[in-house]
Image 1 (cartoon, rainbow, N blue to C red):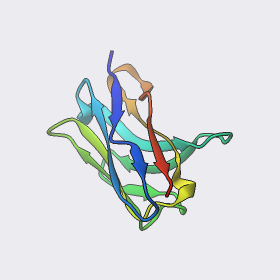
Image 2 (cartoon, rainbow, N blue to C red; image 1 turned 90 degrees about the vertical axis):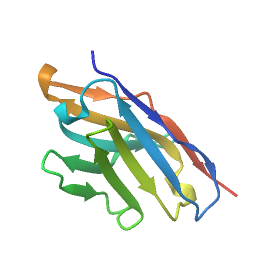
Image 3 (spheres, helix red, strand yellow; image 1 turned 45 degrees about the vertical axis):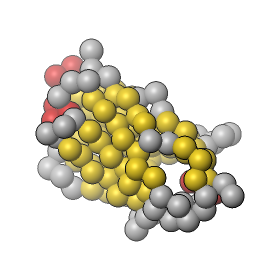
Image 4 (cartoon, helix red, strand yellow; image 1 turned 60 degrees about the vertical axis):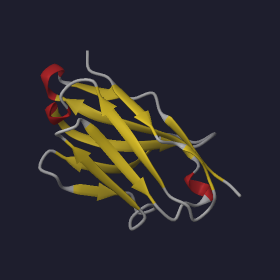
Length: 117
């Protein structure tokens, strides 16, 4: 059973940066598409960024120009580089992906990002 495990969250001041990582226990190349979502307290989970099988990337308007998603097939990681963080970016960040061999969407357990001075 493939698993996704996020890391890299933490407490950062406004304007700061972080790199979130998502490690796949199986072949990350077997995911047709992958993405990052986030869920703030009292709010629904929202899509943040995605990368398609062909490499095309997409971003929510709220993070465009500040966040960059990338996928490292060789080492089995999905990344989210986040810059110019704002307090409203505070949330638990989740990675997910559609795993082709089992035709299933897989979610990680999340990593907390807190933006505060």
